[in-house]
Length: 151
Image 1 (cartoon, one colour):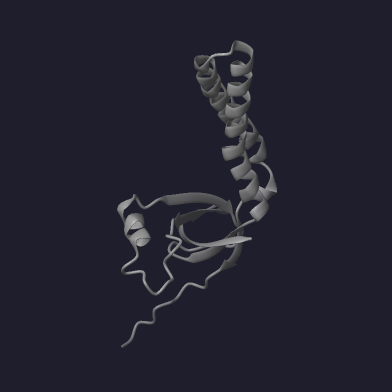
Image 2 (tube, rainbow, N blue to C red; image 1 turned 135 degrees about the vertical axis):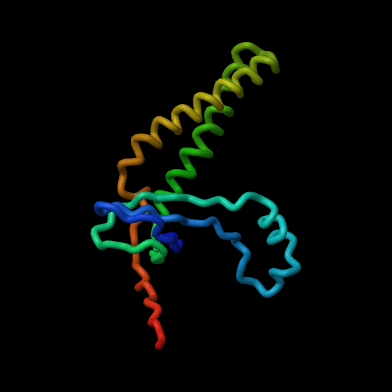
C-alpha cells in the first residue's frame, strides 16, 4: 500500500476534499542542500492534487489524513497509460511497414497506433474507475491540535 498525507480543504455531506502536494523523492538524505536533483525538482511547478473521498466522520479544514492506494491499482494504471500506447505503436508501425514496405507507412502506423493505444487506455480507465483497487482510502485521521488560550 502506498501512503501519502493530505490536508482537508473541505468536508460537506460525507464527502471530504483533500489536497495532496507532490513531494520530491529525495527529501530525506543528508546532502539535500547540495543535491542537483533537489534543485531541479524546485525549478518545476509544484503539483497539487485535490481528491474527493467519501468519509462518514466529520473532518475540519486543515486536518491531516493519511491516504493509502493499493499497489495493484497503481500498477494497473501504469500498465494502461504506458504499455497500451507502446504496444499500439509497435504493432501498427510494424504491420504497416510489413504490408506496405515503406518508412513513411511505418511512421503513419506509429501515429495511428499511438493514438489508438491512448484511446483504448482511456476507454479502460473509465471502466476501471469504478473498481475499488484504484481508489485511495483513508488509513488514519490525525487528531486536530487545539490551541489553548492562556490568560
